[in-house]
Image (cartoon, rainbow, N blue to C red):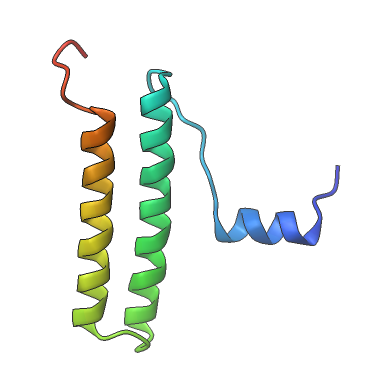
Length: 84
């Protein structure tokens, strides 16, 4: 089956990997959030390296993304149960 140009571009720009951990809804949601975080960090670092963002702006954006990921982790209760 041939992918459409849109699907091919989308899978190139936003790659997703399988999840190999314990399959629970909260783990799947956090994994998706983590993959999005990694993708956005990649864009920010590329923009900073290319001179399109200042180091301070890049740091500020990365810090905001980190806090967003941390809130997601806390809301989902990831790592709070010691039975894992």
